[in-house]
Length: 431
Image 1 (cartoon, one colour):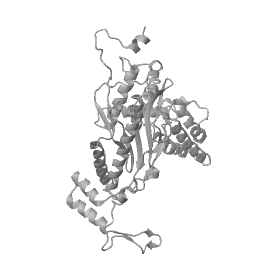
Image 2 (cartoon, one colour):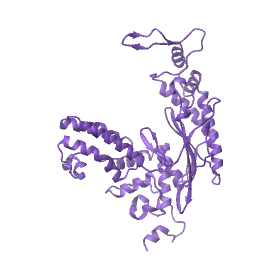
Image 3 (cartoon, helix red, strand yellow):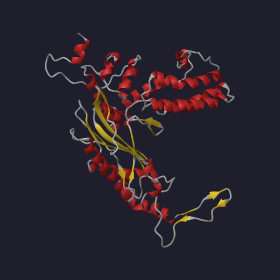
Image 4 (spheres, one colour):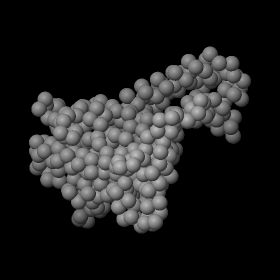
């Protein structure tokens, strides 16, 4: 969700940014013990506890156990050899150790001046992002702070950011995998009267030093999706790839279910605990339309309704209705997506976290594009929606407008500067 909100922010500000996705080799298995010890000590870990853990790992000998017994060959501690490094898979302190090291690396990148810095338009607050990280997968984001900076300037500083990140990763004992790295150049320009992303040039490359063997990393266009935590994300905000991905999952599930003999109770547990959970997982970050949701659900309903003893042509209002109104109690992915979006906005609104800043920044950006005195949540989407660029926030507004639900939240509006000032959008729509 945060990544998609950041893409929307770049697009909404008509800005320039570089996003670099990288994957660290070996993660836990290549962490240098001295780095781990210093990072954990900085967070207050016990000197005695760290010595006990690290000394134990350095003296361990590892076997492979099979049904035929333990292997005769081993690896690990050898006399007169350097001790083995790494925190080991399954170590309870592994995630905390990785987080401690990653925090130091991110802070070092921030101190060096890299990252994405944006100014919230109405609240007058600063937003700073360095990266999005999940274990060993990290998406660096970098933009120039000067509004008149050229694309060449951005690429030079992005290369510096990548080189610095690679150096910091290498200093901890790990390395980046060149084949798993890729990057986007997001440069929003006006062309033929419409806003879009600038076409790529052949001489625009980012390079990994790769321990003295330089490797050019793959560049993708803004309309190319990549899988991140099971979600097909693309910087231009379109959902075709995610829809096709979920449709493929739904179709595979439907083909499998059609060949099974299931009782009605088994069929109900099957649909609720398997494929519906697969569909619900990405919904907080997606912006699927009503037609997209219906397309994804078509093979699922076609396969499961006969096994549930429900007529195939039953109206969706009954299928997705709750048991209290004699419905089938199936969850509508489109409604679930809207609820997930609204819950995310309310849940993060009062937290001191990047998600809260990105929500506020995107809401105020949408408000400025709409240009109305009233909060855009209270305006009819059919009349004002065309003024806002495509975004997660706009999609939430559009879907909310089609339901009886209302959102009463912070009013990100600008007060009139003079007594009889009027907003142009309000004046043009209310002659």
